[in-house]
Length: 549
Image (cartoon, rainbow, N blue to C red; front, side, top):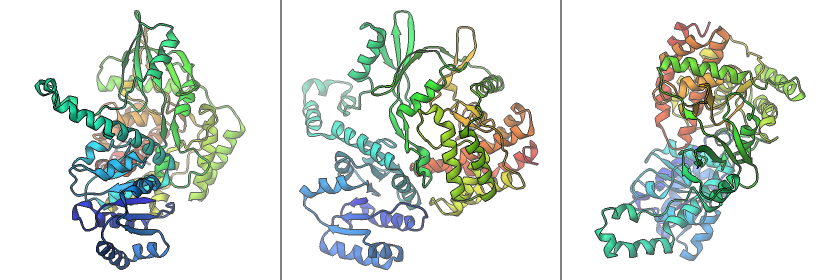
């Protein structure tokens, strides 16, 4: 259920934009059934909204099915129950000084999708307690709602975080304490008054986490400090002259489950034990840092040896170093002949022959079983073959799964056709990939050998997936700046055979499309334009560097 609460006649609250977004949702295929509740307004206002809905065919049809409810004004005492029933609460305001509806909804555990304006930007932790979209963008608004409708785990995690944040920031106790603090003499004279007024943020180094780290080392005198800003809490631990890294694996939702429909038996969850088991699987990997201690109970924890970061080198030298390291990773733990591999190969042949959604689902399940050896037997969606991922986007966009701009769809279709036309699906055996090579993951041991931290995204893939990720998203430029010309030149330098160059290019294109769509469904349009520019320059670059025949 999608909830709008506010006065319908107040033009600032954005009800027309919400109705436009709902109308867009009705045009999409394979979207879970949803209902709309509109709460607020006098009988006259409700009557006006009712007449408007009846004049818009898609909304009228939705209402006839009982999936649009106009509640009008309700008692304040009833609001908590209404908020708690909402899968997601929307606040599409054009202007909002504060945003009390967002606070109330979060207090009741409802994630909030809101326009990026006014106080809403301070209330909502974008991507943690809800999603902010560009104000007055109906297409982007509808896109963010599709992610919540498709992934119940995203709704649950954002709802839990929303309740914690609202209670920490806006409870009566916290608010009144800051009001009292504002009028204290010492506070008025302080140079840091405004900073002190900010509400308490969620504490990362909790008492429980600190106790668990101390228990591992058996020392109360250790020094523990927050180390990174990633999704998982990471701490630097100093014990005398020795230094370690402690990483807790929090539960997250699967990006694939938010993007793709019908994941079936596959888990909509990520992080937690899934990430922990992936790290454990790579414990003997020659590129992995040495693990000092690990605990799977409660919030999974791994403590590893600290290593110094790789020193700065030229871009070309860095590409050479990383390329050689990633080849070593690919040769670790090769897949044995087994039933899961046979099922994967059969599913790959099936999707190559039929090229439809049912065969894609069969392939996803086979890929998940193949990779379950490193996820504690949990079945998760794993992108294992670049040509199949390109085919996936081609099929899903033709089925109108997402409300994407036409120009983006056009360039995406052109790029995919360019790479897949007249080219058979390559039936290569998957090899181990790190899954997320970034500059901050590059470390050096005492002998000067390169290590790569954070194997929590590792999986078995066909072709140089890691190299494609490195070229596209990191290294010389970030994915917001990468150009097709530059990436194709780097592919040509580092890949030895035509097949490697081709598969690397397929991975690059599939990943830039994936993250552009993901960011759009997360309320951010910028990467759509960046990807459009990348795909615009791609055809001539592929031909120039002999990546396509």
